[in-house]
Length: 126
Image (cartoon, rainbow, N blue to C red; front, side, top):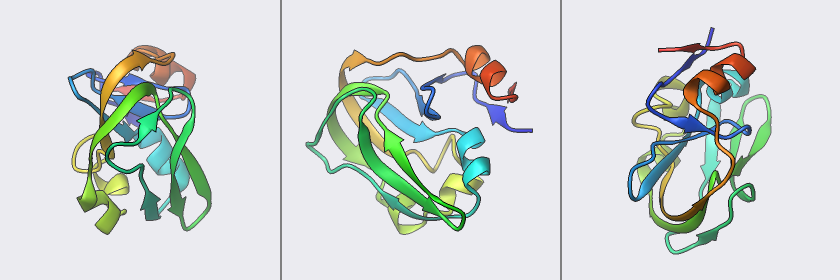
């Protein structure tokens, strides 16, 4: 069973956000397990303007290609080059080393608490 980090909030599309400033964004363990072995990640560029709920990149696994959706509106201030260089980090550490990008947030999209996200995805909060 997938686990959900209790310190984050989640989009319905499986992205997490830590609520710091700038906010760090990643994908949940639920998504990582559903994707299987991640082999490629395309992230937005630093300076890109993101809109909550809109596509901002993609994750490719051995099973499928999935779009990344921004959980917030704002400007990308940093991307995680380590996860681009080693996409398998998404599978091994989705809530840590595999963070994707940081955003100077101007507006949040609809987000779920860890408990709400876990309940909707048959996961546990740990």
